[in-house]
Length: 411
Image 1: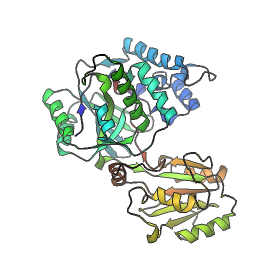
Image 2: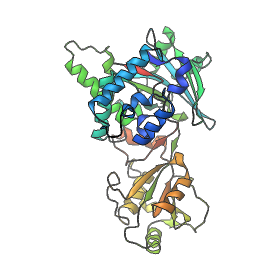
Image 3: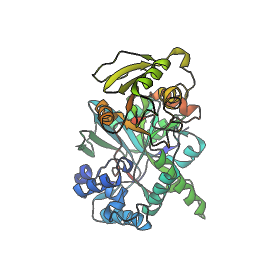
Image 4: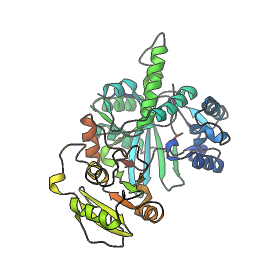
């Protein structure tokens, strides 16, 4: 069972919410983060990426950077940019993108659910990325970026969520990328009890996005528990900030690949190798988007070709049968020599939010070929996580992203 509970939320003052809410810290490089904060001094990115307050020569991971994040948070809380709820509550968070609505519940989830596997993972984490957020959470004393969790749809959760959405929202704004954000409070004792009970009936939660944030929050929680002479399960370090979404409302976008060279092959030789391994369509100049599992499109020399995996190469294994796994096994490794896509600088991963036009741009500038993938499905993600396995790197891209700064959990 999942242990999910309401929390005493620190959140933006209503008139500030639209300017404070920020994309996750890790979608920006340092220069982009600095430019975003310069353009909007209210942005929560100033706290999430406090190196933006320092000269570029300052180490991103210097102790004074994390201290600055803590100080900024305290200053902005003191001056009224944020308000603190009087009592624990849940929050319904609705996002609308291109007419598609997804609605989650902002809550806290037990650290022990992560360590026990009740919160299932499908990606590895990198130690240096974990360490950054460990120091941020520990120094600020708060979790500022929620973990994006998914669950198999529950009618009991739906009932409380739909009732909340009939009330006046706390926030209703459209962010600069055109996404509408609405937030509703669930403070009634009967409703919060119903939500907690509904989540307790769900056997497993799944990390959709935010593996590093989750691992970091758990590490800080366990460390604080170990250092506490009188630990109890009710203390806030035992819980991590999340927004939980039903699987039926989520959409995974394609995560595409571009390669810098053809491993010494001419375009003609490379195309011949591709034709040996896949069923390949005639070329065309217009972009081709894969429409079903088992297909990918290839951009080579300004021409698009649809490629299909052959039946003999398909697999029922939850990891080996993923399209991204098959492309790696059948083409990227044996033909292009990309044995480890996590570390090989010859491959780049391009989120589907950028569109196929980005693949065309890259092949005109710094890449020799690109591959557009059919998106991984939620069923595939659940199957991998349920098997206790991990997906290849860059297998899923979720949109829209959760905003940081809308919900803050002090520990």
